Length: 326
Picture 1 (cartoon, helix red, strand yellow):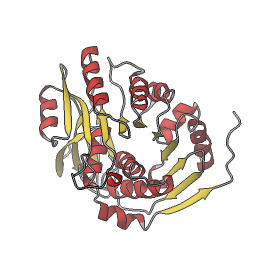
Picture 2 (tube, rainbow, N blue to C red):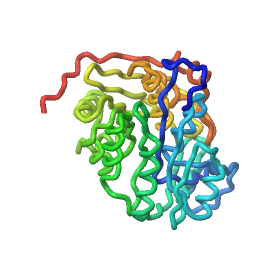
Picture 3 (cartoon, rainbow, N blue to C red):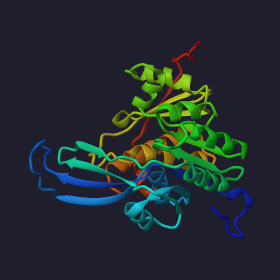
């Protein structure tokens, strides 16, 4: 974000950069009820640019916060993806086709997803994207690394980006899973945002109640300043060395859950990069995620919508969960 000439130095906000290695075109169709093996007449069909980092930038844009977004785009689908987003999205062309995902929404609120195959990424393309992402950072920037790593990408690629960003004085927010998450944690990102399943995979065991979730999050917090665990309709928890916070969100009519976690990430970045506290960021981010599920595919909540929802967020400070000894 570039400050205006008459903007006081202390009011300048840090730049935000997002990266989506594996973007997609999300095709949403709506039907009364999905019946395997039957012909369905769909009531609605919507094409939406997708991918975690893309969604974070779109959510930030709806909050009035600019960002720069980088990613791979290939083939005719990649050209459509690039043409469907503003100039803040910058793309590295690859030989393969950008993936396409089918998302079937039912009147009951149930969502069934069919994610298409990802293109393989060659080393030259990876290095080009790396140069552009890291070249956009300066001291004080925030880098959001989101999504999985398709074939051809270095398995420790996110760790390398995190290390380089930290050396530049940037803060890294990581939303990934599996080996990509495990390796990147070694480079000490500032914020990590797993969901319950991703945290369970990292911990190596199922996580049932909130106490178990918080215990695993506190172990992960040895590698990050803040761990935020999204729990869907149950809300979210945030863990730092200073404390543990749990939010509960109101029941709402779910239109589409896709992008709720990305809105949570955007909300955390928006508040933390503006100097806000972790509890304030968690409340705002949880309100943003809750608003998102009430909106149609491709729509993201405004600050006014988030503010109205935030008044319904309940927060507890946990003081009875001990830091694990091992």
